[in-house]
Length: 427
Image (tube, rainbow, N blue to C red):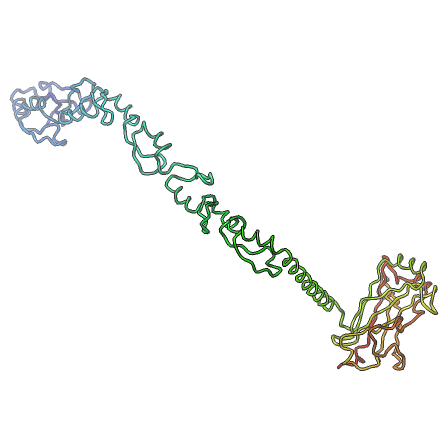
């Protein structure tokens, strides 16, 4: 034990140091007895670098001499950079980390000091680096721009047909499908149209392809090359004229058939017609200026296979109602199924003039009806030319009454003609 129970350390010079401030301590002050000092200096100790791996151990008096050669002891850098470096690491320090070392760049071969080499590394133009386009190639840093512009497989280049830009490694695949790339004509003519114009070329321009006559829809069956078509067109004008004339005749018949079908579809088969008379004021003025102005309704049927009827209207009256009343009549027209119907026509017919009052409860419609007289010619089976007048009411409603109520509103009048469905003679 040292005096007062303190534990002193031994420094690199073999001197005891204070555990408080590491200053050397005089042996004489610690061990005033020379015999005690001799005993201490002869004691066995380990190297102060024992924990770093030094295996030396011997008498304390030999420690200083050992430290002069201990490879783990730190000494000033041999290149005089000022660093304290263990002897065992000195070579690595001088070679790799000493700022005053001299070394050559492994890429360009130039010699630099240690600090300058560190700055040079990462900027050396001869150092291989990966392409910034990630094509996988490694090129010297000084050649990267040239590589990106001229050699990189990921650089963008325009398609020489359509002008769109693609990477170098995909532009060839695009060219095989490019809509503007020229393709050989399958008819083996000398033309090479763009891919998206091939159909038009074959249809309109290819001299080797077979084409149909322009009058094919009229019935011409010619098929040949374009040159042959030109000759055929010049030589067959009369034939084509005859074909077009026959086609026009057929189309006229078809058009008439379609018109008849549309007319049948638009016909009323309910046995009741609501007739809308528009522009009433103008039509009334015309009826007063001219004699015998008659308005006729659309034809309608009592049923799908029933009688064909049509209403007739004289706004300024007819017969006994002329110039004072509005007259209404019903006509029996020749129908498609007259041969299957019972004659004479014997079903109650009613006429209703609607009061268009804004309050339905106050509306007062005018209704007239009749049962046909079977002895009258008007109700016999009609010939191809129907009766000129028909049967009805020459004094259906007076002009004075028309003015009193809302039978005409917004210049429109509504008249219903109805056949009693309970008395229809069906086949």
